Length: 309
Image 1 (cartoon, rainbow, N blue to C red):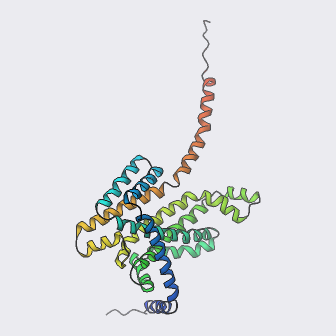
Image 2: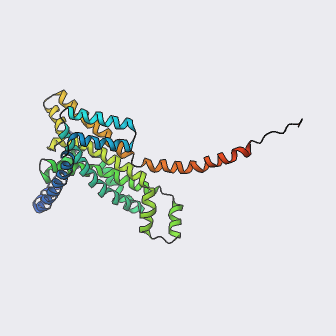
Image 3: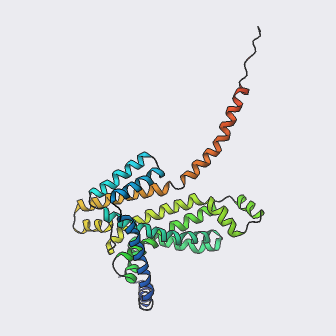
């Protein structure tokens, strides 16, 4: 029988740390639980108080602004199908959890990304933590959340928030680092202070990358919401888990189809937020060239002079 050279027990100190935190910081966790519940209930009230057709019309308007008529037509059909499957309330519950978790993840991740972009030491500290978080199995996020907050909605929101933070950090750092150094030096030469350079130069130029990070945060949050249904978080995850536990393929398929509709809608809407800036930039670049072509066309094609004339 093989005997290891030495043994390492990480589980015992981690369990003792969780027990200590639960015993001495129970009031803090209760306060966080109350805030999370109120935030999700507020968003859920906004989504469920109007008639579902009114909410569908608002989503369709957002889709038209973000895309074209085709995406608007898809949005109408998708949300009408969700209503027809009787999953409207569950879909809005998932959307409320995704909204709260994504806002919290962006509020946490973007400042950390800005800090990581300020120097190599900060980046060296943040990067291994992000690598650890992104390689950690998804279900592991649920374990400490359940220990601290019990079973229900709150551990699902907390686990989803923590799981969705890394893309916001990475893409914010990447976007700021990709800002042209000559532009930053020019702003510094004109006397701009570091906070002015960050607020008026680096963050606006890094906005497409930051918005890509927001898009990834929302997608990860939606994927985690389904898994959070295993700990009692209300929404489409509960429907999918019920389909698995009861071996009901139809229920599981309908829950999964509603998740796909939500994912496509959120992906297209958030992905289009940075697009108008690029379109306006392209128009501004093409207009002078077009004007130059129209003014130079008569001069570049003179009428040939006939030798007989």
